Image 1: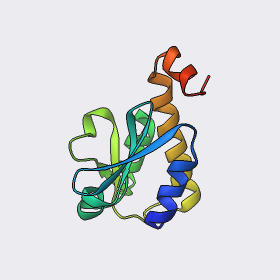
Image 2: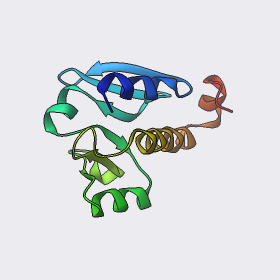
Image 3: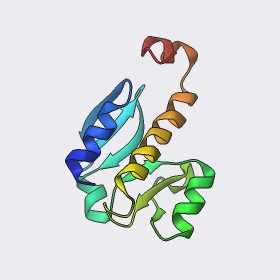
Image 4: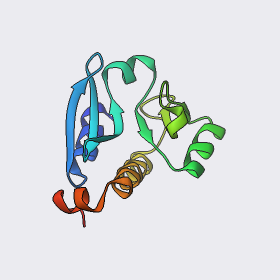
Length: 117
């Protein structure tokens, strides 16, 4: 998936904002909490990074498609071995899951304010 397509997939999700920080890295957030990273630091150190479920974390690493994300592995983030490690449809599904994992941890008040409830 191209960086432009990755950004478009992230921004298509509800209530997402993009901030550029950490050496030009595009940081995608919902409710002020990040769920995906692309470009900048992420591009120089490998592929896209995103939050995963415990099962997806283990599976992606075990199958060699991803590795634990630098600085974020303890929170079950992965970094793809390359931007094309997954088919576009699968990566889109993982981004939606990452978004949903973060939304689920927001307070009810925050979800309502963002129009997510």
